[in-house]
Image (tube, each protein chain N blue to C red):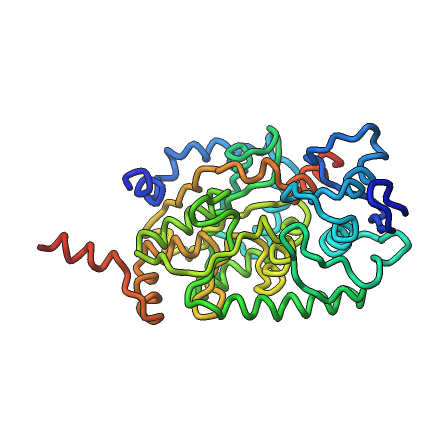
Length: 217
Length: 146
């Protein structure tokens, strides 16, 4: 269907946008989906993006339902207007190609640093209590230098990392490229002393060991 | 720092506010809580099981069933590493996790571990992340269609 704001052809999932908290209040029930994609506002960052990018994201990340006719416009809209997902495959080669590219990208990310976390928000400003707990635990151990990825800014990562580790929730923690667990597991490791040991294996000395030494003086 | 220590300290089961909302109150069980309870009972034959609806702690409407904590004590966890225990629970609840549950906190212990330390950790305070989260909105909508 044709975008009234910017021209071009976009595809809308058959069951439409399911986002109940969309800040763009529609005029009518039916109008909601069209309005949501037409105005090219990214539903997560509230930044303006092209209709092609919006449609591509809706197709890739939307609920698993039948899609309406019309492939996402060929040649791909991945201009990264809204804080780019950057898969760059844009040829409409299908979800399998996207999944493979995402997997490869995540593989790179989890191996880039010794400690890698996927959280909601950032270490400076976590947006979720469980993600915050992970950040605080790492901070207690003096681990400040680690890879941190905000899933709220990147839907491709948000869903992709769940598929990658076969783990349904965020936050997710990786040590040396290997999935460790979520907040509960990190907390237990912290409580039973395993975290200090695991950090040691990574060549990181936990700050708690120094704190202990200070106490004993 | 002291607030953080409070966060990380375990609390005795009986004094936890969350106990009020456990599945002991069968009359108040929503469909999601019932399903979680049933599936875990069937697959893990736990000696102790608590399914706690923690949605009230988060930025979702009253009556939601999106955030849960499960405390499950089972012989089947004996000799199984922690990550695998969590994967077992996730697998049992995979349908609910795909469609209804947004957050799941799991405490998985063997009877021996539970006997030595019969309490679980409280969940951290919400930072409002669910409020503008489209993923949560999808799951809330599914609930309202029941």
